[in-house]
Amino acid sequence: MKIPVVDFGAYRLGREEVPNDKLRTMIKEMNKAFTEIGFVYLENTGIEPEEVKSVLDISKKLFLLPEDIKKQFTRSSQPSVPNHGWVSVETERLNPLCPGDLKEAFNIVSIQPDIMWPSEEVLAGFRRIMESFFTRCEQLSLRILRVMALILGLDSDYFVNAHKWMNGDKNATTLRTLYYPPVDMSSVKEGQIRCGEHSDYGSITLVFQSSEGGLQVMNRSGEYISAPHIPGTVLINIADLMQRWTSNLFVSAKHRVLLPPADDKNTRQSVAFFVHPDDDAIISCCDNSNKYPPIKALDYLNECFYASYGKRD
Image (cartoon, rainbow, N blue to C red):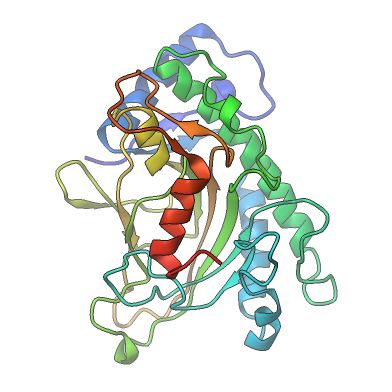
């Protein structure tokens, strides 16, 4: 089974009225994707390829800076925003049973004015481009959450009401730009890949990829299938708290990024927008089934960080 492509044009950014026939089609197709595999490509979202290219280009400039400069912005260096900043290669183990992932990242957890960023002298335009893209992803994610509520026969703002503080200090939503450097196969540890098998932690994730392959998604049969870059689309996936929220109706699927072929020295890039409920939101089954006990969103996230980093800084 391939990951389906769904036309989101009827509710794209900038369009307020959704024709009923288009909405019904969207609901049907997205429901099938989220319940059968947990991933879907959305086309015609209103986020244009030029915007994504701008983010990937400025991100690559960041990752190619000398390490002593990047270290100034190391994740956890700001106590008030411990997940904001640069993450070096092999720092994370998204599969805790395997060696560290062969990737770098820069996390943006807030667009509030007191956050530390690379200065204009270090990297002109980085903050402006990333803050703008954060806002665009936030706007799109709220629209997706509304459609998801309608799929379940809920009020359209059912999920949105638990995501009121995105881009602030009461919500863990994170824009993360990722860089996979060329791989020296002679130094790869046993079981090591570019990004270990994992599922995401929060509500949903928006993923934008460069053309290089490697991303795979596990289907309900336990088989990995390719999730390639499709120009003009955004890859959306269900995350763990949303699976709990929907009593396992929507699927939070494991995914990974494999090593490239031995003779492939290309880099790989992606940008992910990890959507989380507000820290104090209590996640309980929306069908009142009590399949999972209620849990506070921040408590669940801290458990996940402990697994990836060994502790929550």
